[in-house]
Image (cartoon, rainbow, N blue to C red; front, side):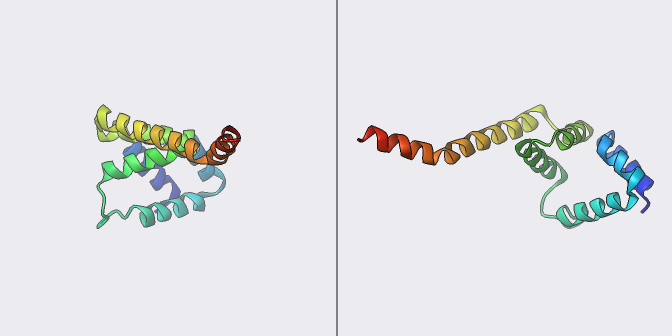
Length: 121
């Protein structure tokens, strides 16, 4: 599949292609081909264990947690293309928010330990 065919496929699946992907094709067309190969490895087009909507929610969650605005926008576009319910999209956001707040609590273990030691002195 050529780089331009891949771009067309992405436009069909997400409504638009992230600017970074469009620009990468101009300077390194092989990169998008590798990207599509990696996507097929992560999300097999046939025989995968998850449906496309579940994959989109997981991808959105990972993008939110990583702070990848490009991927967040791409998944927002895909949510619109798939007609995903607002309730599912928002629940995904809520789960990520909870996971990130849980991470902060876990990361602060040393702080809590130091404060607990200080208060017991």
